[in-house]
Length: 394
Image (cartoon, rainbow, N blue to C red; front, side, top):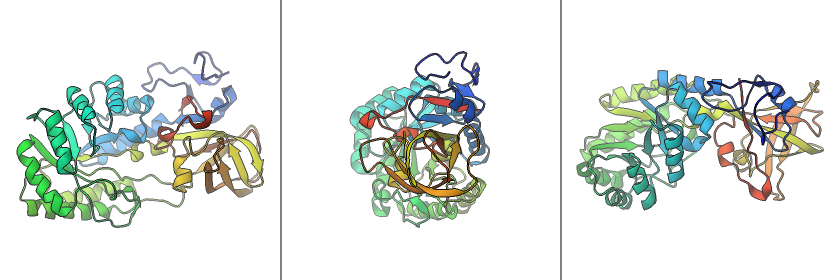
């Protein structure tokens, strides 16, 4: 049997994982994994082929350099899979993420694109060879210059605040970014102290309208004309979406086409173009297997919840796709269910509704899909409920 706290070798259903970049226990199916599992915790599942496919989509389609936003899923198996797929640059935000990448993908190019950093993080990053730093105000620019000793080899990226269009599921204009007038002054201040200077922006998480990128590029063009400043790079940020129930975005190629068209229209073809996908590279490539511990009518009590990988299901009311796994058949009739997590906290509630067979019962396993991004990455150990079990299904 497969016990997550013992050896991976010679387990029923386990496929030898020699030469596999992720280094995880590998199963041919979820059913094989569940049949072999002896643990009591939820199981985090990675689908490396889906992550590889997403990386290929960006490497072949995005009109510039693809850097992975590590915050979406920092699991070493994800990082190794992306590296093996051809991703060579990563966006980090903290000392721990820097050290993780240095240990996992030591030859990677790292970008510190968090707009507000501690002084220790800046020093650590520069000592680790990082030269890409984002800022969104004069105070942060000053910190970077002081803590790098007024280094002459900095590639600075000004984070812009954007007029919001409303197409993003999660707008990101409230916390970071310089407004139009401030950005003009910051570009003028940063140009003399930058070996390379760029601007970066984020149209919002789960952007549902590819035209937002054209509108943003036009905004950037006007801002640069006003500042009368030459830049070297343009970072289009993230926002590239994944399909969820009720959220069906256009094909990813439509986003690439709009960015490419916008670059041509505003005359940015000579700039280094950067994109920072996170969710789009790993979202569909992961899921959580949660066991039903109790059923009360249409309420299912699971061994995983909002303090684990289901944070967005609770706090953002996202209705992730779900599948039932059990030995034997289940009812063809479906019902709408609500989920409760395992902690003592009543906030540990996922309202859904989640569509599952009408005969769900204790002991069944539910696979909550498309949790490769911001699922396992947000899981805590609150109340003693946590999982250290991650597997790959190929």
